Image (cartoon, rainbow, N blue to C red; front, side, top):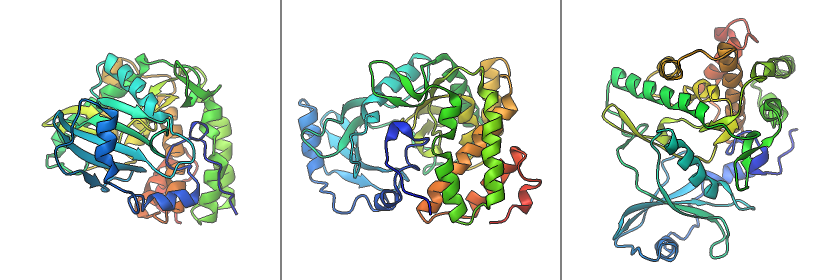
Length: 351
């Protein structure tokens, strides 16, 4: 049986999936027992010049680990995000402000954070206060055409190209420091962190067999070489529609930075279509990326395949732990295995 993990956010591959199994299940019911009445006091205590003027509203429609509250104030509407059930403070609540400044510096529109606190001196949880974002939620408020969606995807690809300008140190999730430095020394170390754990969860869940597990392990031992000359950059790592706001045919904000890493920007292209999308988006994102970048990076297709497979491995593991593995996961995993040339046909992959 797979052993559960001692969760340390800077040492995992992806923030949500590598939480312990019991915490994954617990967070599915995270609003239960939380005293929403403290949110107004939290805002007024954190922002001394702000007064709450209406009813605080919670929103549990998103597949995040946060508790989200909308707060009307005399200075405009604010959003509060709370991290609950984490034993140790989540330093990304504070680091996100640094991520946002860097993305803004190269022209990527983002959210605006006005206060973050992971000290746990007043409350026994970490929280963040931000301005309400403009525009519509691309996942829940989409009513456009495929052509309009394609234009938004093209813009997102151009944003990914701008990540190449945001070089950082190390690889993987960031340690808390004055600068930004990833936890690991090499891309291979980050790529393989918790890989054995994920594959064991998949094996026990009946998604792969021992033979395929070995083939996947050998693949990552071999293929990491395509990242040998890649420079680590600040990568969003979570370009899902629910993290995007839009107006008409324009992206007005990219937000939710809890999964940002020091990594290869190509990984954002490889994973974007694995989220729930209204239309296929990888082709248009890639087009926007290459047009903005002005050249095709070395080993581009191989890097896409590598990151696509690693994404689907953590997603499969997360879905299995949460009791939510469905046909969509199976199909995407099959596509990733086929793209990595580990199976002969995606259509023949059966769980």
